[in-house]
Every structure is written in structure tokens, then in C-alpha cells.
Amino acid sequence: MHSLPIFLDLTGRMVVLIGEGETAEAKRRLIERAGGVVVDEATGGAKLAFVALAGEAADAAAARLKARGLLVNVADRPALCDFTLPAIVDRDPVLIAFSTGGRSAGLAKTLRQRLEAALPADLGRLADAMFAARDAIRARWAEPDRRRRAIDAALAEDGPLDPFRAGSADAVAAWASGADVAQHDHLFAIRLRSGDPDDLTLAEQPGFGQADRVFHRPDVSPAILARARADAARIACPAPPAAPGPGISIDLGFL
Image 1 (cartoon, helix red, strand yellow):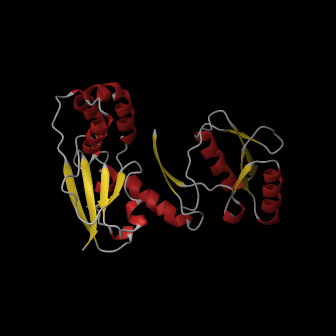
Image 2 (cartoon, one colour):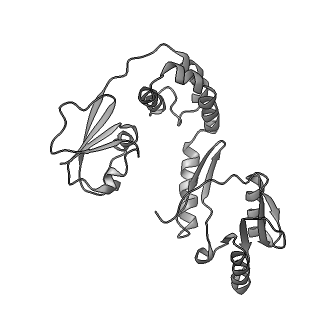
């Protein structure tokens, strides 16, 4: 991972902006859209800065700001950047960011455009509805593991709250307060073709995000295991388990 993705709350915070022209104006719009207050270089108290200059002027401005302890982004100069700006899909409060580490803004933009076309415009309403229903969800599924499995199942493809289907937000209240349904234990076998996680099929990948535990042969690569939820148990074993335990488990081995 080339950098740490974070989301900063800029509400009411000062952000230095140096530059003129469309590039600088684009940065200004982005800062203000995120709630930041654009200030000039002479203003103290800022922690972040954007530089929209070229050549030696950009070098000098970046050096001055860094000497004051600010984190700096310099337009089109990734080598001078302490942080870079991702391409953003905005379905407030859902934000999705794409970054190529400054390698290709065009690639990040294309990824954003394709996902933006696939995501319903009301996706943010689904997040708000899930937040509003949190007490009802906790009351219906008091045990954390059962609650997580219920949410995973609801948000899965073709589930009642499928986030890629428009109108899912309208189903949250009924789902959260409905009659309880039995949750079955499952063990899914995934037979790997290589140690490259990019060889996983689209049908195989969701299991990694839902599994409570991952049984695997000792020679399965760390890159594959990293695709599973961070809190899923990793259990090395020479053969598929006879009793995998409650919830969802996957068993990884090679063809």
C-alpha cells in the first residue's frame, strides 16, 4: 500500500491555497465543498496547503510551506506532494475514493466514472436509513456475530438492501423490524488457481468479505488471505474441517 487512505473533516478548518487559474479554482471548490476555509499563505493556523503553480515557483512555495510544518499538495507534481487527491464518487454520506498514487489521474477518473454509473443516486439514503435503524437492528439481532451476518446477507447481491439497487433505503425499516429468520451455518469451498488474488472470480470474492473464519492449506499465499475480513479467523489446516463452526466459513485450497 503506497499511502494511507484517510478522510479528513475540514469543517471550519483553514486550508492554504496558492495559485491562480482553473486548477486553483478547482482546488478551491473542492476545499469549500468539504467545509474548509480557504486562506492565503500569510494566515497562520492551517495544517494543509494546496499549491497550483508551475516550475520553480511551485518548488519554492512547497518548500516554504513544508518548513512551517504544513502537509502540502502540489498540482501535477507528485514528487512534491505529502498527500494526493483521489478521484471521488460522492453519494453523501457515502464517499468512495480512487487513487493511483499520482501515477495516472486518467485511470482514477475512469474507475470513478464507471462506478459512479453503477451506483444508484440514492445510495446515501441507504446509509442514513441504516444509521437511523441501528437501535432496531441491535434489538432484533442482539448478538454481534448474528447481527453482522444478518447485515451482510441483507446487503448482498439481490438481498433486501442490495446497495446497487435503487430504492433499497425504503426497505430498511421493514427489514429491521421484521420477523426473525433462521440463519444457517455455511462452509464454502474455494479452489484457487494460483497465489494471485486477482485470479479470484467475481463469484468467489464476496465470500472473503462475509466469512467468520478462513480455513486454508498452509501454502495459500498471504496475499490471498489478506482479501478476507480483518477480524476473520485464519486457520491453517491440511484438509477441509469436519465441523467449521457457526456462521459463514470458507475453505481455501488449490485445484
